[in-house]
Image (cartoon, rainbow, N blue to C red; front, side, top):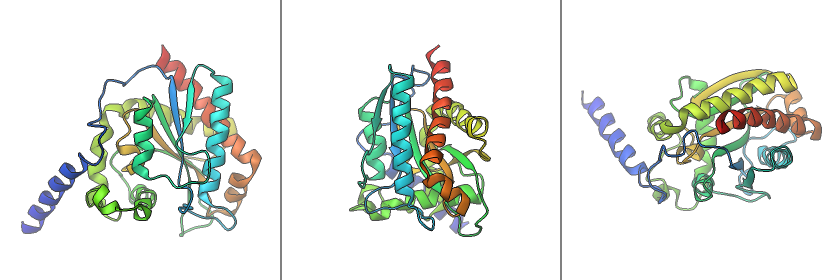
Amino acid sequence: MLKVLKTLILACFLFTSLAFVYQEGPVSASKVDSKVKVVVIDAGHGGKDPGTRGRNTKEKDVALSVALKLGRKIKEETPDVKVLYTRSTDVFIELGERSAFANRNNADLFISIHCNATPRSKSVRGTETFVMGLHKTEGNLEVAKRENSVILQETNYKQKYKGFDPESPLAHIMLANYQSAFISSSLRFADQVEKKFQSVSGRDSRGVKQAGFLVLWRAAMPSVLIETGFLSTPDEEEYLRSDDGQDEVANSILQAFKVYKKEMDQ
């Protein structure tokens, strides 16, 4: 009983603390189902944070290349959409600043580009697209913990994130409550992304999943985190580090974006 009580007290404290991490204020549902006019593309990691690694590849490099290709394609195909990047060079951007940037620019969609990895196998392959929510499997939690561990490289992260522990399952559960206003639109776009990975480029899709990501939790708009493939799997690493592979990944996301925009603009 005492253990349960302590857990509840910790959960309440964490929930209250996280509500005041940023100055943007609480997430509002006012932009749900709005037309898509501004898109923020976030290249994961960067600078001193390489992200996950393959034998010859760093996640930060693949993410940046795909993000820039995707942005150019969106501008060409949908010139009425304003495209912004959280980073366009190899620099370190704190997780909180990424979503804060999207909020300041009144973005209608936030797309975070990443690469996956697992130490357990060199044959696991495929894409998966995450939205903010409860991690329903241990695998989803591990992905969130890995991506959220970036805060350990930030200055004063303990004060900034009010004690958030990227190793704590409870902490990730608390994050899930903050994107509920945009879950429907986020899932809609995520579903299109995974469908287009299959139909446009013939990739293996691992599906749409939910987990607690710091980079998504304060985004006041529909948001997804796309894992474009596994750098820990040699053939996927070669695909993701190649110009043709990156172009194909960007094109798949573009086609998903076009479908999503058409639906939302009606």
